[in-house]
Length: 460
Image 1: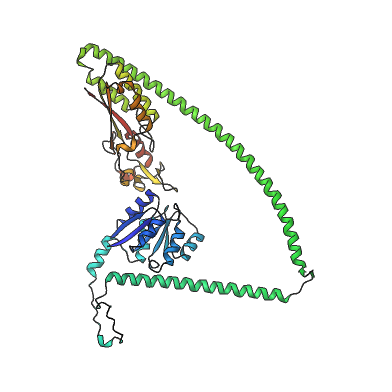
Image 2: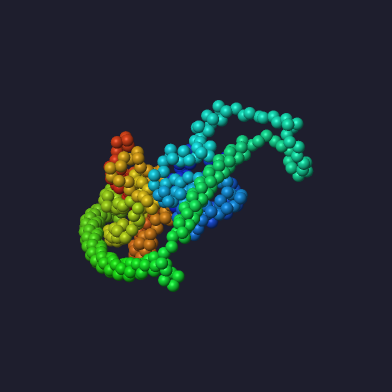
């Protein structure tokens, strides 16, 4: 099986390209830096390399130069897989030996298929059809028609040509043809440039002009003009920089004022939410105390605890990409713990983190963000397609650890807290169907309701 190498330090870009390559009969290897790629190529020859441009350490162009300068790796097709664009960048990449350029922002399966088709790499279904339709042809070569060669004792006996070797030879031949054409074009361009320059020099030398101390008058005039322009440019530049500085200062003041207003608004909303939650928990715990008195020492009525769980679940949602156990959620949990302890509850508080299956798309920085509200769901990527792993250890925030260590009812052993992660399973609200007519805004509104922390109780 042929291999493909992805060189990219962006995990999301790796996942996206690897998913698109799964349609082909390729074994995909991934490295995160150009240095790792060069080490990989020292012992393995992939059929194609997808190279990012901006990476930590050595960038994609430097790695491409080294690959093409090494005779052992010069024939490996390299495709630049980057967010860079423009004719200048494409020309630089091709001049250094890149086979083609694929944009991260607008890459489509058809674009990838077009590039791989040049390397005779086709999707799995087409490869199988081609294998069935094509019968192997063995060519018998008459030894008598071969030119005489000196025998070598260390050469192995001749065998039938390996189909893979034939493909590699064909690819190498095409690459050499492309490079030869580029070199010829460069030689022709350089020749025309040199001829024009020599013609200009000859015409210039044929003309005579007055000189001062062997210096042409035109040169002196040009120097004086350049000095005047330089002085004007410096003055204009200083004035321009002063205006820019004043503009930046004004913008910083405006931005700081706006940030302060936003922080005050968020703080007011948080305090109001906290007050409402405290009132809800207080009213519920008062009822819990009455239930405990009514039932004696048998404990709190389980139905009441289910009501508390429902109330908390409806107030413990978190935004996409936010920390589930952030400061806001820990304030609610801390208040609940003390209120339950005051009501005489003894047992286990069970926390379960649920995530919404949001409709997302990749931005220019390579990050997955919420898709535009008017985008159709069938045109974006669902979080479930990203194959994310949900481990409890990934969500143990500093506020939660401080809550576990400092809450007095927990330290005394009267109340215990357990944490679990259900991931995308057990959504609270069902997602709309069929998705062909659903927009990202409608879908993500449901996903936001499923992005929550549920609370359950067990009695000791």
